[in-house]
Length: 424
Image (cartoon, rainbow, N blue to C red; front, side, top):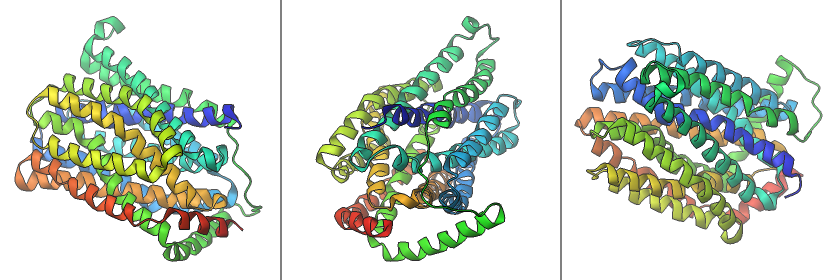
C-alpha cells in the first residue's frame, strides 16, 4: 500500500458517514418513526411508509448517479460533488432533531433528503477508490473503508444508545430528548470526520476539460451516452451489475428494515438496538479479514460464501421466536455484511476503466440504489397484502438466489481484459 495517509483519509469518510447509516437509517429513525412521529399509524402502514421513504431517496439517486458520475470524470469533480451531497446529508440530519411528535410526513420528507445526501456522497467516495489505491490493493483498501465505517458508525451509535438509555448522565430530560440530540451529534460527527478526505485525498487528473457550467453538463451527458452504448457490449460488466442489483437489494433491505421487523415481532426496541450494535462491532474485524481473504483467494469466491450465508439467514429470520435468536442473527450478519459490500466494490473496480471511475461507479450506485427502491417496497407490500411480516422477510430470499446465479455467470478475467482495452 503506497500512500497510507491518503488511503486512511479516504477510509475515514466511511467512518464519518456510517454514523448516519447506522444511528439514523438502521437505528433511531425506524424506532422514532414507529413510536413517535408515526405512532398513530397502524403497524402495517407504518412499515409501508418507511419502506416508501427509503425507496424514494434511492430512486432519485438512480436517476442522478450516472449523469453526475460522468460530469465528475469530465471535470475532475468527484471531491466537489462528494462535498455537496455530504453537506445536504449533514444539514438534513440536523433538521431531523427539530421535528415534533406526530409530524410523520415532515419527518419522512427530511429523511428522504438526508438519505439522498448520504447516498449521493457514497457514489463519489466509491469512485475515489481507484484514485487512492493500486489495483492489487483494491480488495484490502475497500475492506478497510467498510471496516472503518463499521467501527466509526458503531462507536457513535454506542454513545447515542447510552444517551437514550441514561439521559440523565448527559443532562437530558428523557429518552425522546436524547434521540433528538442524537441527530445533531450524528450531523457533527459526519462533518468532522469528512475533513481528512477533503484535505488529503486528491483525485487523478484523467483528462483536460475546459468546459464549465452547461458545457460541462453537456460533456457529461455525451460521455454517459457513450458509456451506455459500451455497457451493452461489455457483457461482463452488465452481467455483474444485474447480479449485484439483486443480491445487494437483499443486503440493504435486511439492514434498513431489521429494526422494523423485530418490532413487528414484539421484541423490545432497546434490545433490537443492542443487536444492531453487536453487528457493527463484529463487522469491523470481519471486513478486514474478508479483504485479506479476497486478495488471497479471490473476491468472487468470498462473495459466494457471503451471499449463501445471507440466504440461510433470511429463512431463519422468518421463523425466529426469541430475542436471543435475533442476537445470533445479528452476529452472523456482522461476519458477512462488510465482506459482501467491500468485495463487490473491489471486484467491480477490476472490470471497469480507471480513467472513467466516476461514471462507471455512477452506474454501480445507480444499480445498488435501484435495488433499494424494490426491496423495502417489496417487503412493505408483502406485509400489507398478507398481514405477516414473516412472509415479508421471506420474500427477500429470491433476490439472493437470483443474485448468486448471475454472479456465477460473470467472467472476471475477461472483464479485466476489456477494462485495459478501454483505458487506452
